[in-house]
Amino acid sequence: MTVPEMDAVLHDLIPALAEQRERLRHERRGGERRRARGAGAKHKLSDADRILATVLYLRKIGTHDLLARLFGVTGSTLTRAVQEVRPLLAKSGPTIPPSTARFRTPADVAAHLDRYGNQPPRKTKPAC
Image (cartoon, rainbow, N blue to C red):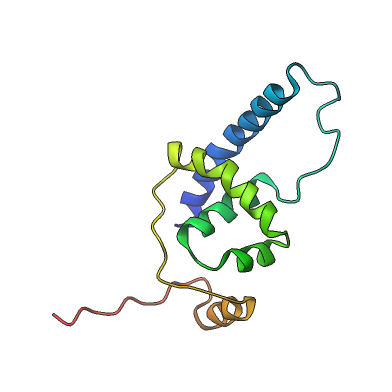
């Protein structure tokens, strides 16, 4: 996914994610807000981070534990983020194919970035 494609996904999904969150909270409360908007506990992941984490999860870039460590959250926080974003991404986002690169530790990610930077590895030529 290119940077402009990711920007388009973020532009489309951030308002949809906020609307979904407000609708679910309204249903859970059974009515209107009791506190001002912005009161209460803050999310550990921003909306953009939630969407990025979901894209990386769907690409199967790394283990669940690795993604949680890279974003500095617990596994359950990452799971909740993926559960919230995944339906919205499936409905209005692009199809996200699995990656051929797999990482298990942050050191694996760092080694990959040292070797390739932000350029993807060159594709190998087919034998035929």
